[in-house]
Length: 329
Image 1 (cartoon, rainbow, N blue to C red):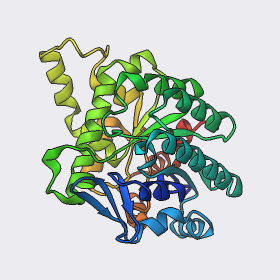
Image 2 (cartoon, rainbow, N blue to C red; image 1 turned 180 degrees about the horizontal axis):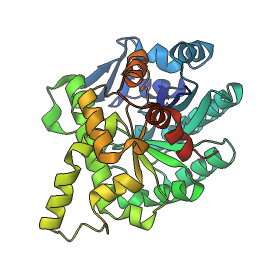
Image 3 (cartoon, one colour; image 1 turned 60 degrees about the vertical axis):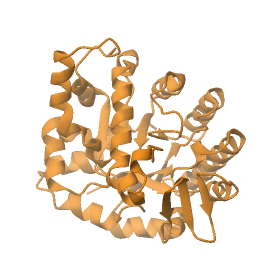
């Protein structure tokens, strides 16, 4: 059965090189092979960096071995956090490299743009170029940009442009500089807890701002089976009805937007119980496959979805039909 991977990460070498030139976080120390995202939060790279940089025949063979037919490639964190000039240069270079990859492997790779979000006008131009000239299918962004986050009103034009161009937005987690996470280590401050808390806060703020009422055609993807929000949606709907507040501008229940504007992938969450909750709350037509390669074991992710107790029709939706419905080329 065909398999489309909506979360497959890579680096153009310009991003780690730019991080290595920095003297303050985020900074990449090539000698120790560690990215320091914030003071006290370090991420050893180990096997990750070579895998992120390898996007040629070796990765295609890896996909073949796992039965992944098509992968949407997206830039790992870092490019958005650089100083403005470096960010513009790195984002444009990364998108150019990704375009060349989609030309070299036209049936295997699709592109997701990374944007220099510190310059809104430049980002809009770059997104238009990525979609209209490069044929990219998405804008890949992160749950925060350091001092700001995508829910800040200044970034509204970027979402509007994505909606106008007919591409989806993948909202990927990023570490937050919350002092309460210091001492947790990267694992808990990032993937195991901090990522989820930050991303669920960002998407909730976007929903409450009324962005999906303003742009009903906008689609935003979340990884990790919805960043725990399917478990919370009923209570969130209930509490916002019981205790209405002026800042809440959305016209519908929070859960409404998960049925109309928000999609999720399985990336990085191999809990059968979490999957069952997400499927029960959102429906199988809102869930897609994502491997989260190389930050997760892609073989384990494929095995997980292959072994889920789903009908043939449900597997087709999860494996590729839901993705094809969203992807516009």
